[in-house]
Length: 155
Image (cartoon, rainbow, N blue to C red):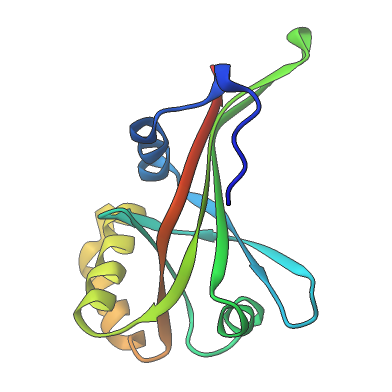
């Protein structure tokens, strides 16, 4: 079902791939729309208990329309990218995930939003939690249930 990586010398272990997911700040979420075109959009995210969570405005937007049409998604993260012109190469760590995405509610939504604040605004927890409370209904959290993960690096 999923292609094997051609460059076995750059293949990461599942543990290494998950470490990249944990340290990454944003990824590109790719969806497929009713019009047959793929759509990729950068989003920040958190990785918790082998799932990826991202937030967005509630019930509106291109990516949400696509997920409603087809919940299969692809998510890509690249970290520590550095072009080395003299060597004609790029150093990087990357992960690609395939899975399905769904909107979550209740306590899981609250926990995921708190995790976003903890990751991206650790010095502003109180302000972040107030923002969550104020915007809770206007915000959706989507969860990616990972079905396949692979990592690749040139270090």
